[in-house]
Image (tube, rainbow, N blue to C red; front, side):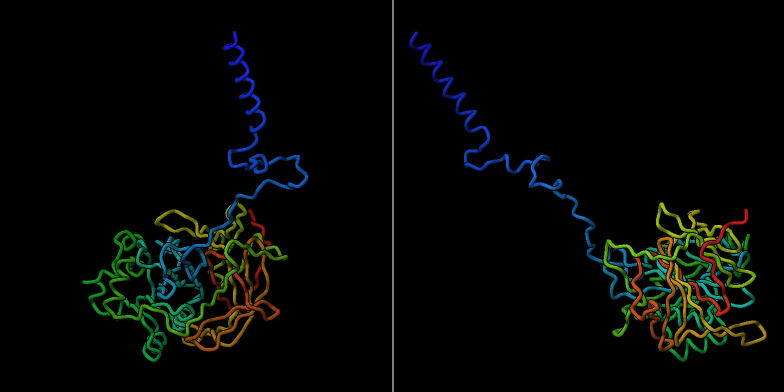
Length: 373
């Protein structure tokens, strides 16, 4: 009986210990203070466990977006892209980081596609001939210029300005036969024509650049034309731009339609046709659209133009379904263009791909166009 009483007494002592010390560990720390209590007046919200956007180690200098590779000191390429209707759709252009478009002659435009990490590009084309003012656009990014032929004005400039270029017409035969920098696509040649069939690839470009001995590092005084907002931030403006439409000429009318789901502008050209990358079926889209106005004049019987790329002028910056007027400035043809807000402060752009439209002074822009359907 005494043994039973002693056992009961021991159980009571143990039970009391559990009640007494249940809220504490053996070090004396009160764990209850580390537990969120929604009724505790000293607590106003749950602890924030979201670390926010993690800043990448490397950035693509043309888009401001994160990159797996440090290309901060490497030159990009600028590839002349055909844009006459019969040559569309182009191939591989959805891989561009930046695209410029400007008139060539006869109301037709050509594009200059910039790529930072060009060595991994798939088939790109078709590639077309140079015009002298496109050299100025290439110099905005200190790019290695890729083309097939050119006007006499372009060739004069390439020689006088010592432009690093990879040429599929007057370049060495090794670019075709040894380095495979250029080739003709059989399907495009059969369906679009001989002059619309020249293509290249990233591997071909890398081999051609090495063969030609082009400088591969940015020049020491290079200053990027684009300044971006802080990583993780997004800039919007008061003026709305849900559907932007303007015409380079009677031949080429362009639309940029804002897609809220992606935060990008879908591009249409040639009067409402989706601008497609033929290799993927993907419609081109851009976080940023820039329009700049430059003085243009016809210089010969073939309708070729001069484009005033230096000095200063006006334009628009379009992003996130909104826009603001801007100004641009370029001190020399081999320098980098700069963009400013109307108050003179530097334009900070959202991170992402950019399309730069170089238009004549008489081009009108509609920021809220409605399809006539």
